Length: 84
Image (cartoon, rainbow, N blue to C red):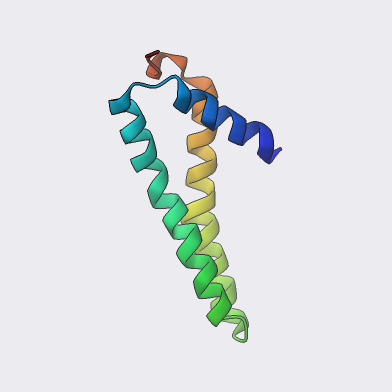
């Protein structure tokens, strides 16, 4: 399931103008940063079950779900993509 979604992201990015591509990258950076920092925080919280659960939920709610929504929208909104 992940590979087709990644392929969709790269296919859409390949058809964008430079300005749209810059915004595309910017929009993806926030949830990816949350996921990355959250994984690092999980390493430190591995011995505290409550903190581990809290960080895991934050990663899901603020990182994974928004990123999943953004990727899903790529296939549903062809009018937002301008060919080069």
